[in-house]
Length: 137
Image 1 (cartoon, one colour):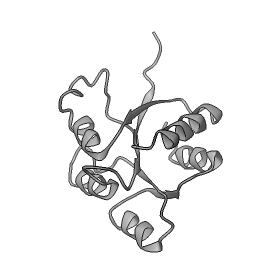
Image 2 (cartoon, one colour):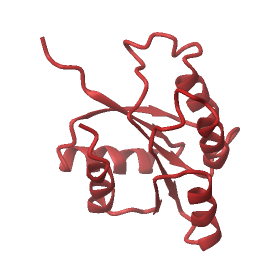
Image 3 (spheres, rainbow, N blue to C red):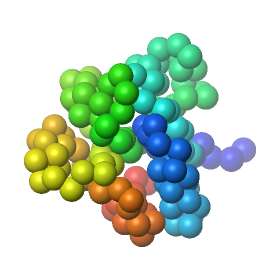
Image 4 (cartoon, rainbow, N blue to C red):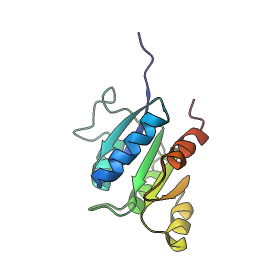
């Protein structure tokens, strides 16, 4: 029987960014199952185990979350704030993706507990390095 792959949750409403992250995972040969949700509200449902994500066999808790900041319904900042208030989620590393190079945005992300802040479009190597730096073994 094959060992269960660790899951990374990608919260991203931009299809081009989803393709970019998927490509980085393939090129970096990162051995993670990548689950994708399209906005912060869907991420809240996934992380909270709410329908349609109640089956943890199919939708396991991630070992890392990669989240866009600007999304409809619930922003990446709001998602990160919520996660840090949940006992079972507060220690999951969160990498924030943004098209903003404003220092105030990166400062806010780190103040809220982000592990890393990457500016889109990110290079494949940058994303691979961040994921590998977590040493999620």
